[in-house]
Image 1 (cartoon, rainbow, N blue to C red):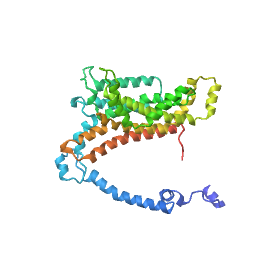
Image 2: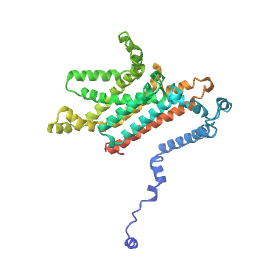
Image 3: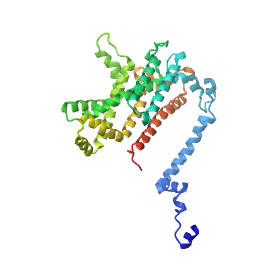
Image 4: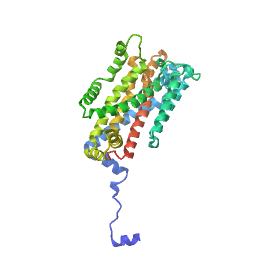
Length: 368
């Protein structure tokens, strides 16, 4: 049959060789103009000059996890992974009692399991809220103790990755419904509600997070009655919730404004009340549109937890800095920051990739 078609003289339908394959991709994306070709060559030259020394320091001349500080200082040409091995438990768990550090380790596992399960849309059911409640109760028991034979540990001894996850996850979980109410209030037709919401959002967004932490740590206790005190960790958590709620409210408001007016009119035509209209029709669409800015807020919020060091709480970055204060290991900051940077990157990259997947699933992503 093929021979018959070719004998008739029909043209070959295969694309030209110069329009497909890796060479065509390079020509289209990296060498499609003279200035792009120059930029490509410059970037390749920069990578060629930077990658070999970095790999030499990272792997080929690096000292193993059993290296001592003395050995590393004698040959400073490579990374000293002995620092990570020596300070790993302090960086990850802070000043939590040494023999009890399995508890924050289980706490991290519980949070990761809950977050991974939450990424599966099959679990988006009302009963899954009870699973989260049970998981948070388990986290409280593990971290505080004092029951079931567990030693009580004050939250002033918490630190490292568990503190970072607790501040970010609980902060975002509480701030999210608050942000929805703020966004709806800002678009409300009731003047008093709108003014209150606008004032709160603009006031919080107009000051840096560090000022809120200072207010929560220093100023708030001054306004409390004598004998009344609020835990330092709780004060920091409230500051994070207030900050995240204001920023997420603006992202959700943008999603609400993107919904066509016809959707509101259709909901009114069905005879739905205000809350039914928002819950069943408007908010699901608005939240789908607002996924990119919301995830951007999530990522920024996760990294901003490092600011709690200014009020005496040691998150992952704080414990890494504290580990560098050991005279025996002073100066190995590159290994410390690279290690915690990888941890931050894993969490942030996972959030970014999941948001892209969620956009595709909801068919809201912009295709290029």
